[in-house]
Image (cartoon, rainbow, N blue to C red; front, side, top):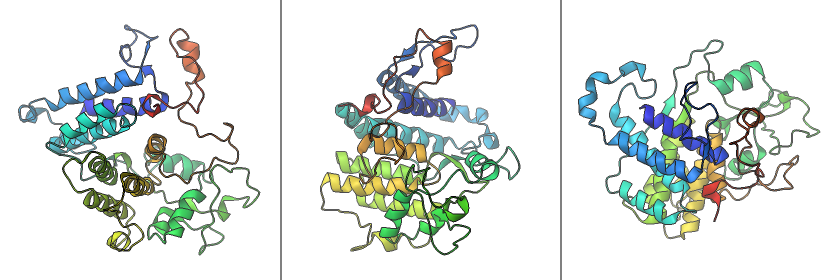
Length: 355
């Protein structure tokens, strides 16, 4: 369990910064407080090895050590932890599909020799509706700093253009126009109107909403992409539809089959090209991550360029280019100046985004 969560965390760090402390990290005050930074590719390879080591354990012999209800993700269900580990490996390999195509393909083919992936959310949901114990986005963005989060017009326009039944479940109506959604152009925080949050649609966020590591929808869409890309066992259309089903369930929206049947707006292009299949799979993944997995949605668009209808924010400071990474914080440069890598432009891709 610890290995899977640690691997998940390092995967996110690599995807944000590329090079991060790894081999020399986590050694405490008696170890090394100024660790070197490892290449993202090296860390990725180590994460796969660590996850495989964990999966190689004799789980049947560990029964007396299972934490049960103290496991706030799967309540001690080791079978689900195995599925989480496999799904994380699948995501790691797909991240490399551009930069290390042969490594990605071999890893995915091995996983699909005996496919065993998540069919439910891996999430933290042990929240209470009281101060400091709520979903952290709700706690900061709604309860304490209400008015800082509004709905992106990019998402709203796509949903509205396709008459998506999830629209009203994803966003609230503005307080002063309860029957008409009003959204903000992505990043245009200097927009002249409206001047108050009461005139804007806001994301639906609740105090007990879970924090997702991997959602069921994400798992299905990862599998659908793997099948479409590499022809491994499985039916890409069925997995794609299962991902939409899981997304509709997440947003408590009925009748998902009404959007992906023959002739429907989200019908899977079974006879289409790979690019056409990836476009619908990854666009639906993007929608499914609204209000809950924005960082993961950023990584996936960063990796694939899908959805391809994004435009730079009106107030961008990157000359119209999209950011691809985070900068190292100044505190790191002050405390570990010898080892922090040179400053990279925010528009420079991390290692898996380079050709």
